[in-house]
Image (cartoon, rainbow, N blue to C red; front, side, top):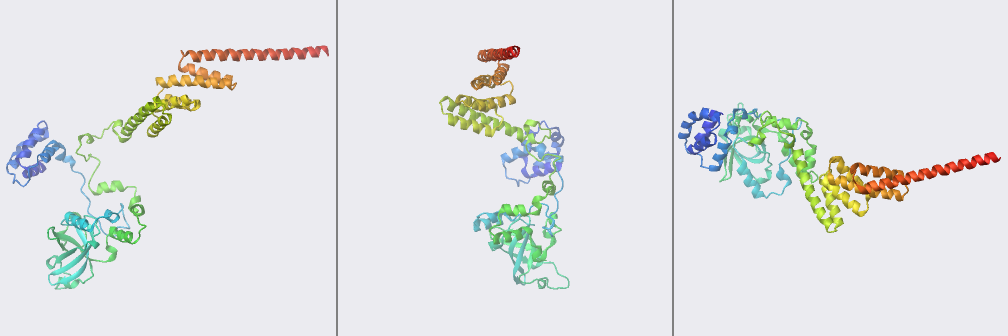
Length: 446
């Protein structure tokens, strides 16, 4: 376990977390190896952390995962600025609130709530004083993606936060009203709703230190802002249309890029759930297998409802339920057998046979499917007999007996049709023989 990270956590939470850790991780040899070094950190707690038993219990239970050295993954990439549209690795979209009806006051309050030191903003100079200049903020350009031009937000850039420009003695002489400025957020007074910004590179966090602050031109405005302006001026620009038009949306490696960009690797599953820490999942653990089980269960509920309708002679409702079950689970055996029985009951013999055969194809040993198919084939054989298709009917009876050798009705029907075929065959031969004899007699006489 990461000793330094554990010590830092205990220094904040104090003795109560240490006691909970000792209870939860008592059988963890990694914790026992560092527990002696942690006693002092717990005792020296400055009491800054508010006591929260639920949070402490979570930390204690997941300590082996949270403080595992291998949990540390790749280093997040630095934010890149410049010609975003030319090399757009992922879809850069306008802020979502552009496509929603969010009240003005709520958007303004959310901005003050979410804005942090080190975020990058773009604004336009609206006033220059001897102690600095004021910006009307247009949009965010790092950290969050927000378009805030309509929120009427003003920010002060104090003269001490402006680097000297070349030979100018007065840093302010380099700037004019109307200039577009990229700046870093220096401080936020959420109660007085005041924002101060800086043009010094030291105001930016390490991940954004390559971003150049100061005067910019229109071409350097963030890509999400330019797309927001176009969307606001054209009612046809829907979220989906803009998304599909983004170059980065069609990047086949977008997922890999984003994971690498935020420092997440698949070498160690980034999850607090112990069940997801393993990479050796069984086939039935995956979504497809789980979905099949869920679909089968739902389909069976529909079949049960259909059987209930069938028992009360509500055949249309029963058929609807069976069809619904098969829409959910195409190869659901019970639904096929139940629907086949309903088809047979209505006299649709061929449809019934088709459903029973599909059921047996999925489950060859299904008892009811065999039984009902055998009975239905006997009925089909009788239909063929009426149509004088005796040979076909005989084959159907033999198919029925292959399913149930002891079926007396199928055996009797097969015996009768076999006798009939033999009798008719003998009669045809006798008729043919008499005709031949008659021809011979005529030849002798002549």
